[in-house]
Length: 388
Image (tube, rainbow, N blue to C red):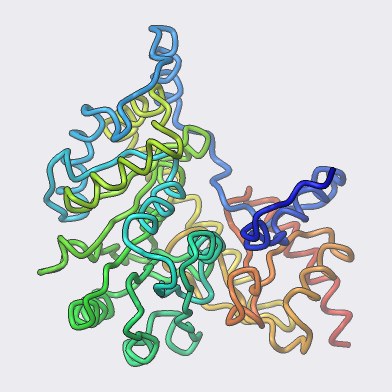
């Protein structure tokens, strides 16, 4: 008997990331610059806190909206760090930020309505939108604009069907940190067109060169128009704890909580309690991670600009570089394949993040410094021959 699958199974395409991970598992000689998670372990105090709560029997469900003590701790964090003034009823705790993204779209967008997505942009946005029978529309980002959203291009992308705008700052894959000026222009456009904004701020703490992360929800008039999505995965190297959260007006959070009853029910209880420890006592560890990422970033950008065929601007946030490889005159997918086969280095083609990512590769510096050096030396050794 042949099982009939729903049409939405075609929405989730096989990605280069997924294919490459299988190759790496089979070949330990390959160095991966494709990592989308910190290579640091979670802070020791957070791990000990999780162990303590597990030993005390915190192995049962939490309330769907999340434990009150974590939401109270986040109220203080949001006010101090993001200038977002809320109370615990404005927060829902989710299984990572990806669930928060799913719940945000479920809550705000009807079938056949449009969702604006940065392109190149995070790989999960389009499948989530299409799974829910909504329509993704793309805002092309250009290197000459420093991969920031150009307000005039944004205006031209909006139609009467447009309901939601997804912002990602700092950005995956470009490392762009949206300026206050750009955010203010986007806020004005959202108000004029009655758009909801979902602000994905998963990389909010990973900022360099004295740049400043600004939450668009903190701007005047935006508090009821924005769903802010944040996470412990990147900032605190707590990917496996699966703790993310969303901040919005109480009506939106109530709807998201009702949908959560049909998704994961609750985020892990021990993880929520350990997250409080992270908020209170892990700031030095976060600073240490950022300092090391910065060291790797500077080296990677310098080395990429020395390698024939590569041109790399300096990212201001996250832990990715997004070098231009158009000089090779082949697709980013083809070059990524060649680097994997000939140099034994895994990179991610820019087209994984949308069609406007063609001509670029994503290289992660969430990898040990020495490994990055070795990987870039291998790449240089191979591509130099192509330009002789």
